[in-house]
Structure formats: structure tokens, C-alpha cells
Image (cartoon, rainbow, N blue to C red; front, side):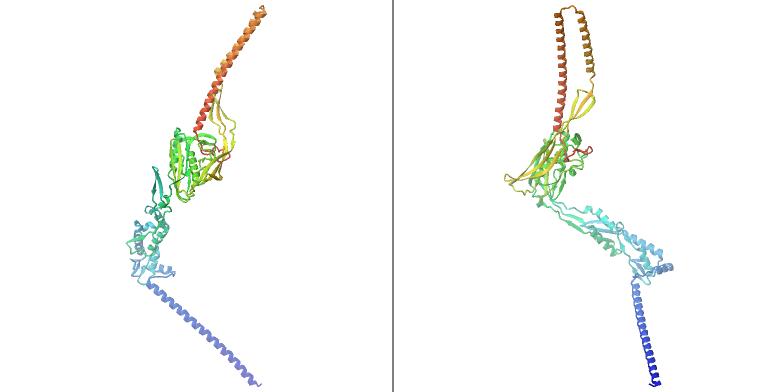
Amino acid sequence: MSYNSYRERGMERVMQRKRKIRHNVAMVIAALVVICICVLGVIGIKNTFFSKNKQDGNIGNIDNAAVVDERKDEGRIEKDVYIENVAVGGMDYDEAKKSIDAFVSEMSDKVINIDIDGNILSTNLKELGLSCESEKAIDDAFLMEDAGKVTMTFSIDEDVVCDYLKENSKDFTKTARNASLKRENGQFTIIKARKGKSVDVEATCSNISAVINSGIAGQAQINVSAVIVTEEPEYKTADVKKCTDVLGKYSTQYNASQTDRTANVKNAAAFIDGKVLYPGDELSVADTIYPLTEDNGYKLAPSYVSGQVVDSLGGGVCQVSTTLYNAVLLAELQVVERFPHSMVVNYVKPSMDAAIAGDYKDLKFKNNTKAPIYIQAYVDGGIITFTIYGDETRSPSRTIKYESEIVQEIKPGADVVTKDNTKPESYTSVTQQAHVGYIANLYKVVYENGAEVSRDKVNYSRYNAEPRHIIVGTKKDDKKDKKSDKDDESKSDKKKDSKTDKTNKNNSTKTDKNNNKSSDKTDNSSSSVESSDSSSNADNQDNKAQDSSQTSGDNSESKQETPVTDNTQSEAADKPAE
């Protein structure tokens, strides 16, 4: 190949490279042109958008702090600019702020009427915590370049509004009331049911907030309707009409001559009388009759405290709970809580009692039937009776009874003797009779057509034994001691006289001596018998006094009745009276 051919090919390759470079440069320039066109288009659209927003008075979300500060320094808001209906055009910052503060104060004094089911509750917006961003509104006004209007946003404190509604709507609301019963003169009177009406506080608060946020400048008063919630009573007249059957009835006797104890029994029974329990409701006797205070009508009467019979406020109320307990058993209601006394009581058999004491012994039971029950108490003439009325659904052929079974008898133990050095040795007084302890069970026996079909244990009860408590005197009798000293002196004188007689009668005959000795023995024997009889009479008198004291203690104990415990241990000294 010739030299020229090589040269031509070299030149052709150079030209190809140049053409490729020119092509690439052209492509880059074209791309730059397209990019510039796009940027200019975006800038144009952006300027158009913000220009329109300025004309409408809406400033947007740009940080205009520097612009605002600059315009505030220059002096005044553009002409024909309004904040709400307040003309602020041509004003400087201080003038605009004064005008807007006056406007906000006027808005705070506006009256708002809340319609609660036809009842009007009125207040002003200030009471509901009205607030607004007045500073922001003034700043927006300074940003206006043309005439326009700045809208203020008002709001209320919803927590304040809710508290206000809860407190002030009470008089316009009613709680739902179930139909109920009242028994007078042997007849039931039905108390009709009532629908409940209440304010839905949260929903009403939301309504008020919506009205305030929508704009309040042009309104003379603000009117809002509360959201009312209607509640239907659960039990109506038809339900309580079923409460006419006697489900359970029980009576116990008390000593009406014990006036304070009788007053306690009547007072506690009155708190329970007339109670209506709807299905599922639970009654606590302690909660119903407490507190056991003078202000609540109670008096001092005998009760059990730590194994002792003492006077305490409310003594005797346990007979009320015990009588009710047995009526509840016969009605076959659900016993939730029950405790025995610490020692046995005399008005029911062991395991059939129910003690009330402090906050640790109570009788609680629940209405486990499908209808309301009514509890009636009657106290008069030494008898307390509880009657439970309801809807009888048990078969007429089915009957029940409860049997007390004593499992073990616990002896009281030795007397507890207290010595009293202010009383003579002959003094003995019984302050508390002994109490026999028991362990007992209560059984529920069910009969169908007179035949026993089941026997189930209802409870286990333990009653503590308590020994007799007596006081004995230890003081010496001074008169008796002096008499004893005189008797000893007399015996000594007689011995001396006897020796003298024997000396003087040495010459007497043996028969005379024997006769004299016989006579002396007879006299001594007679003196001994008299002394013994006197001592015996004194002992008999002391024994009679002691027996009289014991008898009195028995009578007093038979009249007393006290609460007892389910525990197997003795009651603590600081526990309340039963």
C-alpha cells in the first residue's frame, strides 16, 4: 500500500473523532437548555401561586419574621386591611394591638346559651376559656401588600368546658330509677320507674368547639344544643309486681325489759326494713346499720368482747343479723359472708347465728333470683321478725329445713379468780358465769313430697369456752380476830384454875375426884359443840350469799346476748364488740 493511502486513512479516523465530539457537545447543550426551561417554568408557576395568595389575604407558611419586623419598623399596615371586622389599615403596631385586644375582650364577653333538653344554661365565652392568636393576626396584617382581610382563629379550653358542663348540668339531668316497692298496712305500693336523662359531656364539648371555630365575630349570641343521652330503667312496674310471695320468714325472741338493748334491735332493724334488692344485688348488714354510734341512734348494751360480756354501743344488733340470716337461708338466697359469735348466744341454736363486729365480721348475701326481693322487718313485744318477699318459683312439693348438729362440747375450765383486798374474806361475787364451748355444723335438708332427698352442710362454727369469773375478798375480819384472842385467854385461865383445884382437893376421896373430872369433861364438851354450831351457821350464811350471787349472775346472763366468732382461737383484746 502506498504512502498516500495510509495518510488518507489516518485523516478519516481523525475526522470521525471530531464528528463524535461535536455530537456529544450538542447533546449536552440541548440537555442544559431543557433544564433551564424547566427551572424557569417552575419559578414562574411559584411566583404566580404566591401572588394569588397575597391577593386573597392568605400569607402561606413562609417564614416572614424578617419582613414583618421590617414593615413594623417602617411604621404602618397597608390601607384597607381588616382583621376580622376590625379595620387596621394605616395603623402602626401599637394601634393595631390596642384595637385587636378590645375586639378579643368583646368576643370573650359574648353570651353562649347551651340548650339542655329545653333548659337553657347560659354563660360567657371567657368562662369557657376562650383564646385566640391575636399576635399572629397582627403579623399577618403587616404582611399584606394589598387590601384584604385576616381571619382570626378562636378556640376554647375543652377541659374547662367539660368541668363546667359536669358541674352545672346536674340540675337538668335525672338518673334512671327502677320501679320499687313500699309495704304499708299489709299492702304493697308500687313506685313507678323513671327514665334517666344526662348530658353527653364530651360530645357537647365537641359541638361547642365546632361552633367557636367556625367564627363568632358576627354573632350577637352563640346558641348550642347539648347532646342528651336517655337511659332506660332496668326494672319496670311489671317486674316488681312479681314481688308478692313470701320466700323466707324467721323470728327470734328478745327480753323487752332490757330497754337499751331493745332500742338497738329496733334501730338496726329499721335500717334494713324496706330494702329492695334487684337480681344480682348484694346487701351488707354492717354497711347498712353502721356506724354504731350515739348519733346514729345506738345505746350501751351487753355484747361480747374478748370472752367478756361488757356494755358497748349497739349491743344486741347481732340478733338482728342472726334473725335476717335465718330468713335468708329459708329464702335460699346466696350467702356471701357470715361469721359465728365468739361464744354461743341464747336466741338460736349453735351454727344458726350471724355476728357483726367491727370491720372483720359481717353478714352479706346476694339476690340470686330473677326478680326483685323486698325485705320487711318487724320488732315488737319481745319478738323480731324478718320476712323476705319475692317471686316464688320453687315447687310446692319441695320443702326445706335447717338442722343444727353439735359435734363437740368444750368445757370451760377452772374459775378465773380475782382477789379484792377491800372485801372481807367471806365475800364472793360471780361477775360472769361460765360459757360452754361448742363445735357445730348446720345442715340444709330438702324434702320432696315429705321424703328427704338431700342433706348438705351449710356452715361450720366454733364457739369458745370461757371459765366462770369470780371476785373473792382477802381482807381480815378484825372483830373475829379479837374474839379468838379472848377465847384463848379464857382457856388459859381455866387450865390454871384446874391446877389450883387439884392442889386444894388432895385429901378428897377418889370418887369425888372422878366425879369432878367427869363434870369438867361434860362442860368442855358442851362448849365445843356450841362453837361448832356457830361456825356452821356463819358458813351457811356465806354460802347462801354466794349462791344468791351466782343465781343473780345466771339471770343476768340469760338476759344477755352477744356476738360470737367463727375462729377457733380466742378473740384478741383489741377487737370490737360483737
